[in-house]
Amino acid sequence: MDPRDEMEPDQLDVLAQAFCEQLMACLDECARGRKGLFSDVELLSDEGEGGWPEAARLRELALALQGVFARQEQRNALCDEFLDLCSMHGESHPGERKLARAFLERIERGEVGILPSEERKLWS
Image (tube, rainbow, N blue to C red; front, side, top):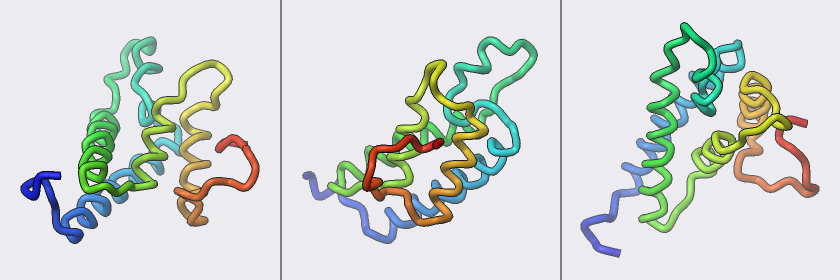
């Protein structure tokens, strides 16, 4: 790794904290019914809705943050799990509102980044 690419641990913590705060605010709003946090695909079919710019920026931030952590040979479980949820699409997956509630509960219980002992779905 190029020494110029290295960041101070405090800088990584500040980035991770800013991401966490924005994610929690968006998750709360999504859990109350706003669409577009995990994907703006659903909004393409809803005429009249203008999307959710903060959610789009959060997804972009998560991708960038994941790259920064990878360059430092580290991981951020919250970021990784959020991006995993953003990649879920299909009829068999729950709605965003249910995903947001389940993710908030996992965060509150401190379960983010911990693999379950048995295979289960996040929204079960």
